[in-house]
Image (cartoon, rainbow, N blue to C red; front, side, top):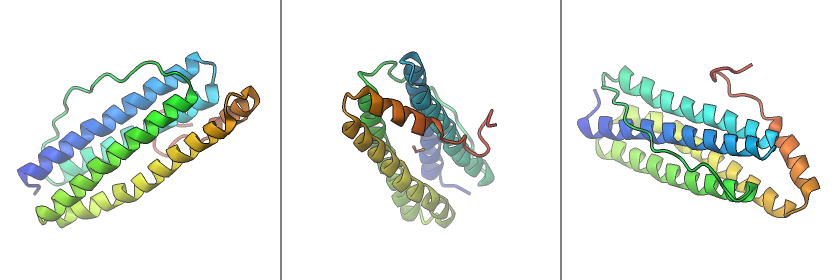
Amino acid sequence: MLTAKMAKALNEQINAELYSSYLYLAMSAYFQGENLTGFAKWMRVQADEERMHAMKFYDYVLARGGTVKLTAIEAPPASWKNALDVFKAVYEHELKVSALINDLSSLSQHEKDHASHATLEWFVTEQVEEEATADNIVKQLKLAGSAPGALFILDRELGARAPSAGAAGAT
Ligand code: FEO
């Protein structure tokens, strides 16, 4: 059984993960509008991944006999200056998510909730990858500068990202 504090915090994280999905979907739409279809595809896969993160928390809350309370998802921005601006925003966002996950992990220890702590370990590890991936793309975009050729190659590379396993509509 989850403590009331833990259940509330986990529900807030469901909302945060759904916001991440919404944000990345908005970024996908932005890239599509810019004709950067590889970036758009990468971001759409990322949006699917974030929904899976939300569902992991959703399933976990239910498995522990908690109540899932879905709340309003904040509207994400709709436009950015360029691809570098987008990925800088992704990196900043993932740093915030890492802080939220760390807070949840600390709370689980404080509440002596070992099951939640074990579940959160997966997310702690996942955030290392999420931050590193965004940071890496920021660095590549900085190297690419304003050279259209380099941006084209990066668009092709990112477009090769496979859909997340288990994502809705994955082929
Ligand atoms: Fe759900 Fe990108 O962390």
